[in-house]
Length: 144
Image (cartoon, rainbow, N blue to C red):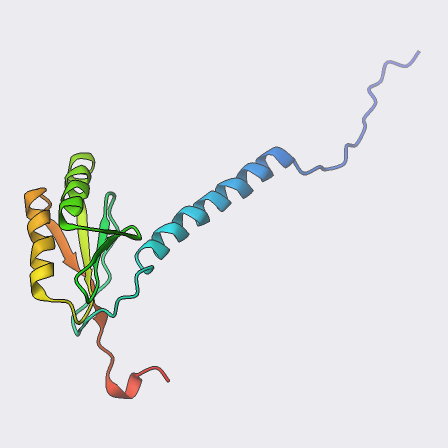
């Protein structure tokens, strides 16, 4: 009788379950980040230029308000009136206290429409308000 142990070498295998989990988590991450980057660029707005413009960190509850040349207001690819904007800002302030608003006004927009948006922010008690601009490029560095 043989009482010795048999040693069998098992071939190295790749575990598929963790691999699939990692692939799906990576896919979800890229889908979510791409949605945020496209939401703010969906509206065709020519931003004003500023020499001191800089990129800020994103915050939770941040909302982009796009004001077109004709005075129309667009939030999340949806055109709305001032009273609808006020309702949206009230909800944002309720769910994300201290949330930020970034106003993307076209170069040709009337100041009165921007003031109306600022007034809605004040009524909703949103204090963190920024204006989106593009960095001014010197004439020799203009894209060709």
